[in-house]
Length: 366
Image (cartoon, rainbow, N blue to C red; front, side, top):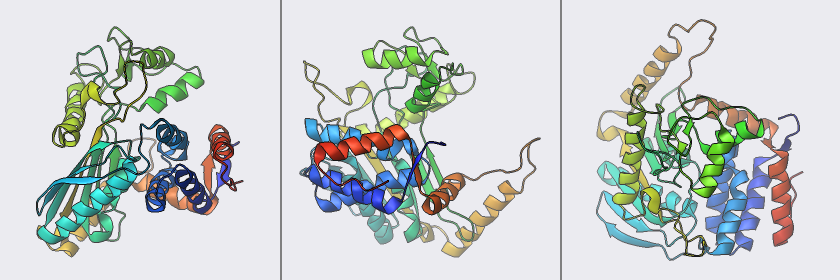
């Protein structure tokens, strides 16, 4: 982005903390949430970074998100736990839930924690990567707002329902897979719509359930809940494996919502009869495995290095110069943006200034 506003991660994080504390969020919770948002921007996942700050401000204002929730541990065993988030911000409860899963893994070899009655928690990869510094494998999942149609369906019934997995390595970078279970996120449609470009067939369907190349039509149908939506990984039907992406999305709903007692499918993000948004009631799932509970840690890391090198050194397709391992691009982007600053879209920067003015907090990013 030639017209991007470059900002440093530290001041950007401090600004977010000021915004959240002004909205009544405890400082520790504010710092956790700010760190998740800015980490997304550093890793190049701009759709889930500070561009989402307005969403949280509005959610806290409306009462959809509770600034000081009553968080409860509903059930617990040596290896598992269920936490009720009290309709608070998704990031603080998720950070603590993943931390609890890691502690259980360190104690008994593996730990799993589910969360219910929560809200949007940012990038799934943030929590999976928390396990890496403890030489554990981490997993993080969440269900989400309804945007994805099931295979052979007409209406959206599931979220983009991301899955993130992180595994440590030795000399190579950790493996970090952070993916939605839909073919593309909603944001891709918004980009194509702004550029007045058609989307590829296989990304989304219209209100009749048929594949469409018109992003504006899909986005308008989202607003009106008129039918259609994003397609699961693999696209429409079963020929290219769309039913597999649908199965993964459904699996996330089962682990995050059915298991925890959260809302699932089209029960998430409920509204009052007059259309006022209520707490989203979404759920999350976190897990950690201690590597040395299975085999010596150094053997595992050496094998991870060898696996990655075998893939990266494999013959390249014509015209290609590199084979990537999941997470490499994001780690490299984070290093680059740490040096050069985070590029904010001018509209995002303007919105951050507007939030600062509305709340009366200092804006010192530019």
